[in-house]
Structures are given as structure tokens and as C-alpha cells.
Image (cartoon, rainbow, N blue to C red; front, top):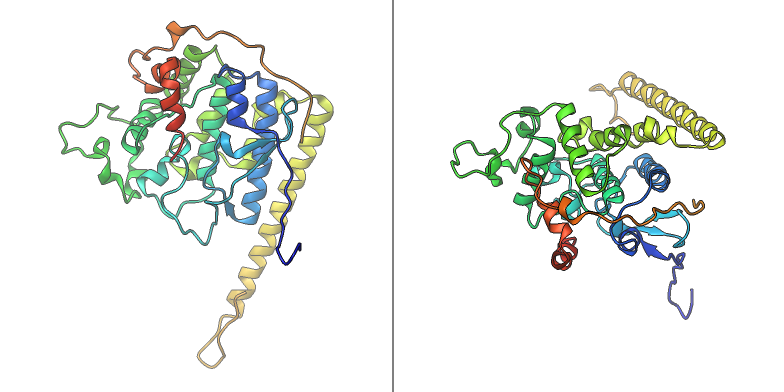
Length: 333
């Protein structure tokens, strides 16, 4: 307290992740640095999941770097966040990183919407550009379809807002052309590889797999933070000592999960045993490392054109200097 005012003091961080990407001229970073960012983000998302919190606006601007020359980061700006069992808002997440289940109205949403955002951030750290830079939700949905294909019938059956998108209206003869069937995982990986190669270079297949598993239409099939921390791309780049420590932490996490599950099962059994009858009363309810930055590489301007059959807006839009301003302004909701 100071003069009867409650003062809250926070750490002073250097810059956010978007400013860091911009500082390196949108050229992307090496795998070592991306991996360190990924581990910290997944650890943070795992902790939030343990607390039952959904961030609802994960993006580079809301990830802060402790120092410009270190890889320590922190997740910030919980202004849109909520508890999983107390969902308040339906219009959430910045558009470039908005999960399709939010746009389609697959409710109630879960922390898996943050994992979609995580996948978008990972590919942006590699290429330097957002994967889905739509100017509105209809265009955003089309960009997603161009990369990962159409959602399956199960997802569309749970969607309460699909009628707002002409891509899913069979009676609309003017619908934007889109694949008529759900594409395979191999095809989705090939499309992502094509984009990454055009914007930078041929990517690590395991890194592509990590992103693919985050970019799922169905939130139930999306990668979880625990699965992400155990993914082979995360594990293979760690030094032996760090790897041992990381795997030990994963084992502890798994043991804690099993303990919590067992306790929850026991509470459920007790609750069933104590189920009230007509004669009874009402029942009771119960950080930072060393530098590892990418040496600036020139992106061939000729590669930042339309992607042939996959007509993705982000390649042409992010490539031209005149489009930078509009791209940056569209990062807002």
C-alpha cells in the first residue's frame, strides 16, 4: 500500500516475441531457439491446464522476452482469459491465431484453442510470417481450408455457426472453391512443407509433425501440452543433461496425473455410495539460455508469390513491403 493505493509490481521485460521477429527482419530463427521457446510455452500451457485456465489470446505480442539476448520468455495478457468451467466470451483470440472451433461455434471451448495458437506461433517463428493472415473470419476459414483441408462431418455436426460460412453451404453455388473431402495427414504435411519451403527452406519433418498435430479441426484430436513436451522434435534437440532432466520432469508429471486420476475416481465412487435417498438429506458435492539466433538469411522475393494450386494469401501479402503496414494492422482483432 502507498497512500492508500494498492500497488502491484511486475517484472520489467524487454520486448514481445512479435517485436523480436520484426527485429530480425521477419527471417525466422534456428531450431535451437524455437525449441527453447516451445518448451517454455508448452510448460506454461500445461500449468494453465492444471489450473483450469484458458488464455484465449495466445500470440507473439502476448509472449514477453526477459532480455533481448536471452531465450527466457513469459506468457502475458490474461485479459481475455477464463476458467474452463466459467466460459464467458465467444468472441476471443486474435484472428491470425483464432482456432477454427471458435469461428465455427464448437462450444464449450477448452484449452485446446490455445494449442491451435501455439501451432500457428511455431510456424511463424520458423518462417517469420503468420500462417493464416485473414482480414475477416470468412477469409480466415478459407486460408485454413487451403492448408489443412475441410473439416470432417463430426466437427461440422457440432458447429453452431457453420451457416455463416459459404464454404460449408452446399446450396450456395457461389461458394469459394475448396476441397470436397477431408485430406489425409500426409497431404496436410506436404502442404505445410510447401509453404515453409517457399518462405524459407525445407523444414525438419518432425517439426512439421508437431505443427500438424496442433492444427487439427477437431479440438479433441489436437496435441495437448503434455504430449507436446514429450514430442520427438522437442526431445531430440536437447543436450544429454537437459534431456535427462526433461524426461524426469515428464515422468513426475505423468505420476502426478495418475495420482490425481486415482483420487478423482475414488471421490466419484464415494459420491455414488453416499447418493442420497428419499429419507436422507441432500448430498454434498464436493527460463533463459544463451544466444541462439538465426544468422539473417535473405528470403527470395520470387518465392513469396502465390502458391500455385494452394492459393494462400499469406505468401504474397507478407512478401511485399507495401503490405507490411496492412498485415501489421490486421494482427489486431
